[in-house]
Image (spheres, rainbow, N blue to C red):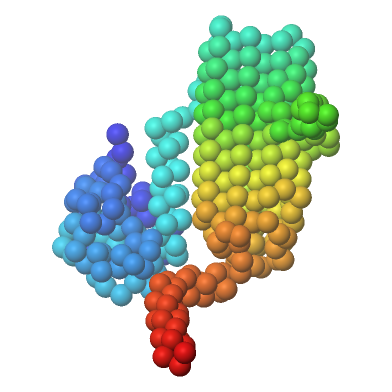
Length: 349
């Protein structure tokens, strides 16, 4: 059960000022409009500024420059970024509620004799560790996981239940793989020859650099040759498909249901919105943003924001949307002009 005092919250959140007074501890986290006296809330979006004055929350994380005072029996913790401050609080709660399991290998796990397992590793029930695999310090591998032949899992990574890290793949340090993730499934490689479709062996691997997070049921295909690479610090959402030989740069955000076709390269700090689709053999420069449900079929230079299908620069896409809404009226005018012209033509004839 959550139980944090105001001084504890202030310390965790990095508060630069504390305003107001209240007694008791915080027992839960809630939205501004739903929070009660025992709840912590936050102003993470200026859209909800008006709700702060109406909120019943016991403690509210507000920006340093927020204009307003706490109500009676309420505390404001002024912070640089309320959303990040809340993340720090949630990290502290997570550490309390979900501590890492003790080191050790469950009796039902199958570990090849040639695997190198650090003594601080925890391996859960019915997991399988293949020949020559290397599992670094403080790694947690939950139940029903498969770590393939000569694969590597780096220091401090957490592998949730039901994850597969296929043969020869590499997971860096401090990575988090959610349930159902498959790292190193075969790339979709086939060649039609004389009315037959022939499978092309996929003999490369996948490399996740340090601090990569991968969401539930996401698949990252092994390369046809060489490597599929996910750069350091990149975060990938649920249900994402990343094809063979894709290279994603550092600190990218890839949101739910994105599909990236083979041999495409993303630079650093790119953001792909939900359900965006990227064709193969393309290059996206650094800091590219691609909107939700966009369909991309061409290279994008750095520092660009594209949207729509086919994807175009965001300014052009917005103009096209505005114009498309005027099309019904335009068609009516064209029909009216055509009818008037037809009437004039008939009258002259």
